[in-house]
Image 1 (cartoon, rainbow, N blue to C red):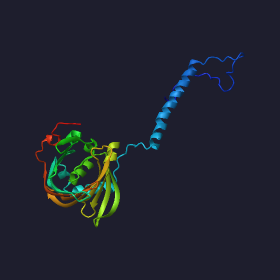
Image 2 (cartoon, rainbow, N blue to C red):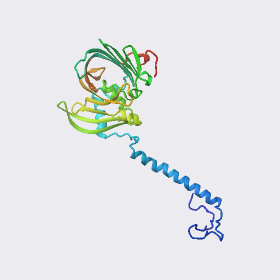
Image 3 (cartoon, rainbow, N blue to C red):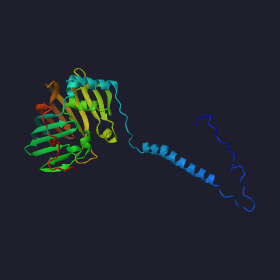
Image 4 (cartoon, one colour):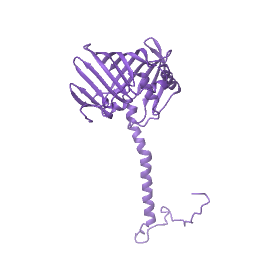
Length: 305
């Protein structure tokens, strides 16, 4: 209300604590008037709102309730990502990738060294994926399935936590993974420092998707870049355990033997870990922008659960 607005004159009211409202002889008190009742009700409402606005958030913080993160981009970390994209072919060139088909051979080595060789075909298009491995012990296919991932083992499709579809990135093509992250304004890039990795100076940054609390929890990554060439050396990340939606498994990929495909540098040697399992992948071919049918990323049984 403007300062010059006219306010009506309000007659002073007796103070209930001053003795002006003493009970008359005989012990009877005058009935509480309607305006007084209204003031009491309004006071109770105000107190309730103050409780909701101020006290409850404090309780949430004290009890460990996660709060939404604000995206953060440190200048040094952001410059490192930009340099890496430039070193791997340039932003304009990498941005032309619509899909990628990667084929090769991998050797899985569990802790008991009983692993075997298998052929793989990994297909990615944006956030859609199809990872297929054909081993002598049987095939395995994992598809994004329109945001409801499904896993084929021993001829049976089973559901996988939807969180996987939200946080999975084509890390085996680091140029594409970093492009997706850099193009998301909710992604944070945090500078950690310069250290050594495999005897070489490495720039260490962290990245994560701060779109919401789920992404913030499941998407954090640690990236290491060659301080001389700008190329990525390693990525460490957390992957949802399957089928347990609440679990996380540590995973990592070391990149090596970069070769140019259509002007984009791609690692043809991948040393990977997933929990206790180690895997060495030798890439034999990489094809960008092939004719990939959208049904490639769907479960063949049509299931969505």
